[in-house]
Image (cartoon, rainbow, N blue to C red; front, side, top):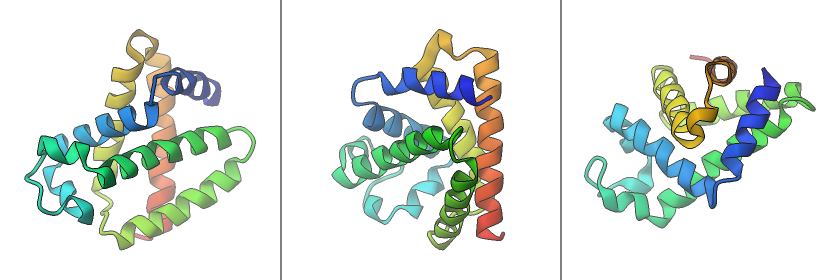
Length: 150
């Protein structure tokens, strides 16, 4: 599983400005599937749901790129430090619960992540690669949910 994820992530990372590009795409997909999720982000107050202008907001761009940077770190930890990654994910789950993230939000993010990877990778997003990412997201979401203690 991890080799397919690592190799496919290298293709994403090869995209110019990939953290910002993939981050925006991910959040467009999240806010399209769950417009109410936008209210979890204080820096987006004042924007209409899915307003085009919010995607240019410097705070949004910083957050979106940061999420993808975190995915990058997580992918890098898959082989050498899986236990460390699980600890990080548990802490992240606790932190997100404080922000108001609910257990029901995790499947939305998972679908958005898979959709983002599909768009970014195109033909390289094979059934095997998709299955590996779906499995990984299952571990990510279950571990974060465990950490949050829902």
